[in-house]
Length: 409
Image 1 (cartoon, rainbow, N blue to C red):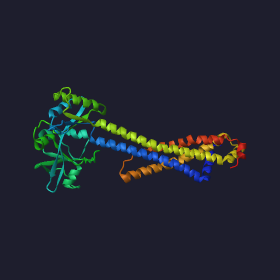
Image 2 (image 1 turned 60 degrees about the horizontal axis):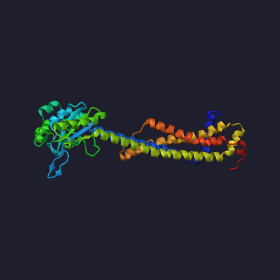
Image 3 (image 1 turned 90 degrees about the horizontal axis):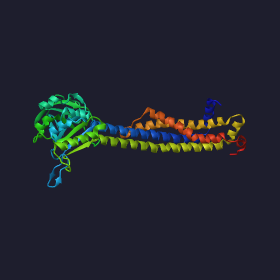
Image 4 (image 1 turned 180 degrees about the vertical axis):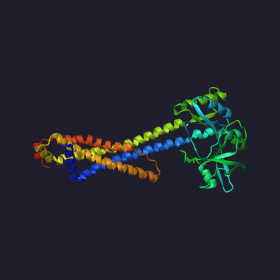
């Protein structure tokens, strides 16, 4: 028999047993749809997690000053000024460090002629925006000249700009008062959304570091009262950069062996890599659980095909008696199994893609669909048909034609 004849006979056989065909196809549909849906959700979660860490900064390390004891009570990191501007200059010279920017921050009421809004006011240098990979939507960024001159200029996040000037007004060139000091808006940052911790990254304002120290901070001007953002040269060098910075600061702060650090360095690169590994493991687990349904569907197909062989024993005997070879019987039943899984695979792929899109829109959950994943799902469904259809097909091909003709159902 030719392949065309085998396929035509298999199609007629499946059409005669509509209920069994539907149940077999349904199992494959559910299995393939479950795999596509879980993989799409898992991959979407991994991408969202990576995006959130990318917004936080490139190869980001965060340096915080030490803690201060008050009457035996430890104030926590950042409560005592221990990191100086000279320390940051020395860190900038390390070979595994690319950029360094201080970021002292205080909550301040920003005031315009029409409105006011309390937000976090940050003192930064141009490297800060490179470390965070934040881009300007309109206007310009804080420049090195602004820092050198201590200019009263300010860059706003979108949330702050909308609260102060409304959603449709261009704030560039407008004046904002901070602690009674007038600042000219020179830039508006692109939308950044919410950080992994849930805070609004657009609800911030930025002024030159030197202006912050002179006009806002006061006190000892050689110390950095707040966090410092540091970018390592690469993710692979981040851990070594942490060691280099710690060794340098201990030496500069004259800390002897056994004395605790008077600073804290947090490696966000290691945290991001750990979170990404966890997300990948969860995605793989979800896909593995969904794949179990494919195995169950395959077993169901094998069971249905075995029942079909028993029900069609006389038919098989008659085909052999009129000249069909055992290989023809084998390929016919194998074709039926593959057809069931291909139909189920195609329908399951469409269902999985549709469900992924629906769930993404309904719950605002990110989903990531791959064309090659859909193709792979159909190939896998065909492989399931072959794997679980071989045994019933071999059983059918091995029937003795005389016994088959005598068989009574």
